[in-house]
Each structure stands twice: as structure tokens, then as C-alpha cells.
Amino acid sequence: YRGDSLSGSEIVQDIAAQAGNPRPETGRAVLTFPVGFDPARNWPIFIITSTSDFNRTSPMDAEWYRRPALAEGWVLLASDATIRPRLDSTQWRLAILAAALESIRREWPQSAKWPVAFGGFSGGAKRSAVLGAMLAKTGSVKTCGFFLSGINEDRLSEAYRNYRPGGDFLGIPIWLSSGQSDNVAKPQDHDRVKASLERTGFNHVRLERFSGGHQVKKEEVERALRWFREVGKF
Image 1 (cartoon, rainbow, N blue to C red):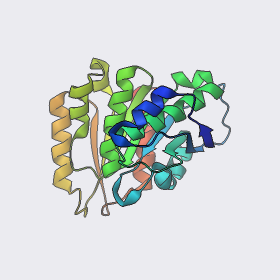
Image 2: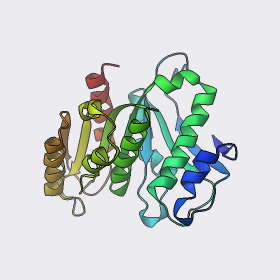
Image 3: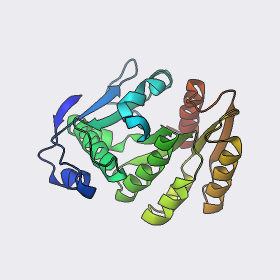
Image 4: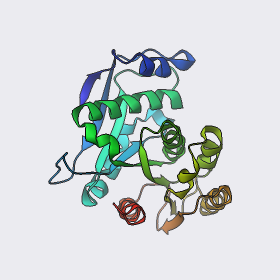
């Protein structure tokens, strides 16, 4: 959808306007649906969040994940506002994403029960970890996985301690995707992230390496989404 009004949601606007940001009036999102999509059935949703670097927005990154998501039967969601923030904060991203989910649920109320995975690359992976914990704390999503690619710092453990989403959160499967020649998030960085997550108590952490650098590998996205289904049995 594009241009959906946010003016009726003062809570969303208040969250987005923190740190001196403007109050967004409209939002937009990239939504892709698998072949044969029928909203009467249960469909997992894969939410993409981009890094703030280089002024990237989540819809810009959506194409990296579109083919793998469709191949595995997932709905893909990437949201943004129609104006730029003064500070591209986590609160800004949270507010816009919450508005996008609410828009989907107005259309299909049953989608509130669909499994949701969070994914991102580099800074987007870190942001995805925090957003996933924040939304899990509210009980507004049924989180079923994290795809974290090119990540050099464990933000998920920190978010778990800060937001305390509940013990079940530790059972969510986490896929770490590491390029063997990545010079930004190096293989040893991914080793440290995995060890940190396991120390926190996450019990489904999988680190997979691929031939390549600091990038998203579409084949790895596809494998991760398939694994989330296997672990979650949906």
C-alpha cells in the first residue's frame, strides 16, 4: 500500500515524533504476497528493516528478500513514512512499522495471529533485533524467527534484557548469515555474536557462512525462512 493515513493514530505519531522528529501523516510499505495467497489461511510475515546508513529505507532493501520470501510462501513487509525524519531512530521505525501492521490487520483481522519473522542486513540486522524485542514485549506479534545478516554486535541480547519480552522469547530461532570475506562484520564477529546469544540463553542459534562479502545472500534467506517453519512447525 502507499499513502495510508496515520492521522488517526496519535500514539503512533507521538512515538515517531520523539527526539524532535516531525509527526508523520502518511505511511507507505512494500507488501508482496506468495502465489495463491488467500487471507483466510495462515501466512507467515517476514518484516524487513534497513540500516540508517546511506539514508536507506526498508522498502529499498525489500528486493533483496522478495524472491526468497515468495519461494518459501511468506508475505514480505517493509515500511516507511512519506517524509524523512530528523533522526532515523528506533522509535521512528517502530511507529511506522506498527502503523503498517495495524493497516494490514484492519484489512485482515486474522493476520494478528500469523507468525512474524524479523530480518535485516548490517545496521538493519541490529535494528531488526531491537524492533522484534519491543514488539514481542507488547504481545502484538507472534515472533517466529530472526534473520540477521552481516551483524557484528549482539543487539538482541541487550534488547531482551531491556524490554523483557518473556522467557518464551529465548526459544525463537535465530539465523546468523556471515560472508567468509566480509571485512565489515567479520566471521569472528559473527562467532562472538553467536556466543553472546547463547550465553543469554537463546537455544536455537544457527551460524551459517557463505562465499562472499558484506552482502545479503538470497539463498541463505530462503534456507532461513524454511528453517523457521521447521522449528515453529507452521
